Amino acid sequence: QKEVEQDPGPLSVPEGAIVSLNCTYSNSAFQYFMWYRQYSRKGPELLMYTYSSGNKEDGRFTAQVDKSSKYISLFIRDSQPSDSATYLCAMSDNFNKFYFGSGTKLNVKP
Amino acid sequence: DADVTQTPRNRITKTGKRIMLECSQTKGHDRMYWYRQDPGLGLRLIYYSFDVKDINKGEISDGYSVSRQAQAKFSLSLESAIPNQTALYFCATSEGTGVNEKLFFGSGTQLSVL
Image (tube, chains in turn orange, green):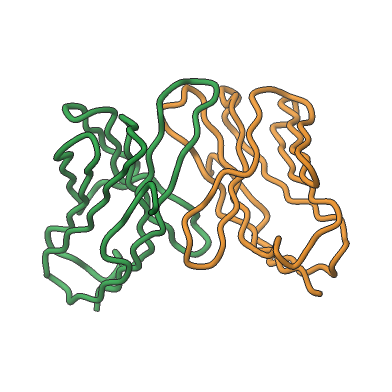
C-alpha cells in the first residue's frame, strides 16, 4: 500500500467551477501537509501548507486536513484557465523526507 | 535567474552509458534532494543530502549515485543507464527549519534511455 493515495483524475471543469482535489494517507505520524502545483514541463511549486487539522484559506484556495480520517483536500473557488495544472499532495512526519501523491491533472475550460 | 538550476533540460542516451545530471542552487539551503517523476507514480526520492558530508539513500537509490561537491551543488549519476530509468528528474532544496519547511524544485531534466 502506498503511503499517500491521490485521485488520479484527469479532472475537467468549466471556468468558474469549484474544484475539489483529495488525498488519503496511511501513516498517522504525518503532521505536515502540503499542496504543490506543477505546470507542464516545470518543477512543482508550493501552493499551500498546513501543520494541523482544520482549514487554511489563501485567496481562492482552501486546504482542509482531517487527521482522524487521514484525508486532505484542496478546494479551488472560481477556477480559472490559469489553474490548469497537475496538483500534487505531499506529507511529512519529521521534515526529513516528503511523501508525494501521484498527482491530479486539472483542466479548466474557458 | 532560477534559484535551483538543473542541467541538461533534456537528454537522450543509450543503454549502458554513464550519465550525470547536475543541480546548482543559489538559495543558500543546506538540504538538497533528487527525485524522479513517472506517470501514475508521483515523485519518488532517490537520494538526499543534509549537508556536504551527509548523504542518504532514498526509496529508489539502486542504479544511482550522487556527489555533493559543495553546499550549492548536488549531482546525480547513472553509472550504466537502463531503459526503465527513463523519467523526469527533479532536484530540490529546503532550509531544514521544521514547521515552515518547504521544498523548492528545479525545472527538471527529461531523461530518455534507449
